[in-house]
Length: 79
Image (cartoon, rainbow, N blue to C red; front, side, top):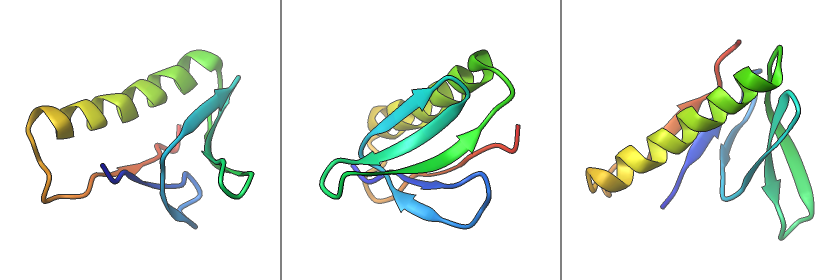
């Protein structure tokens, strides 16, 4: 499945395969190129986990409804 995420700063649109959180920041990790890109930063760890759960729910919704013809794009919330 292709998942695209627009960064919180709205300056990048990335095809994402792996997402990681570190305290208050969410990163897209590209192991092939050994690089990470900051997707968004939030005020506390709880909010960071909420945003990660929103991304997970988008993925589940896409698979559950077999929406294969559409490409999900998640926009990182400002806060």
